[in-house]
Length: 125
Image (cartoon, one colour):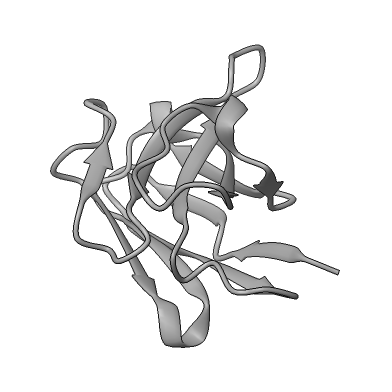
């Protein structure tokens, strides 16, 4: 059974930091496009950050540029999202996702065929 499992969410004050992890099991995604998405209540799920299978190209939404860093350790089949200088508007459920048919950058949620269950990030003002 293929699974993506996120962890690291929680409650943090504005200006604080969190590090999210996404561990894949059941298959390797080492050569596949992966990304982090988020969904706030009443909002569409949106791309936060994404990277190529080899980690050489990274994409960031304008709202998180300079504050968030996406990375991956293919040896551990794990992807990370370091979130610094958090703002209340970053509050959302964060999901990791993979496009098993692509090794580029995936920013379209409809292209992802594997999803984690999500982890809640709440930033208080």
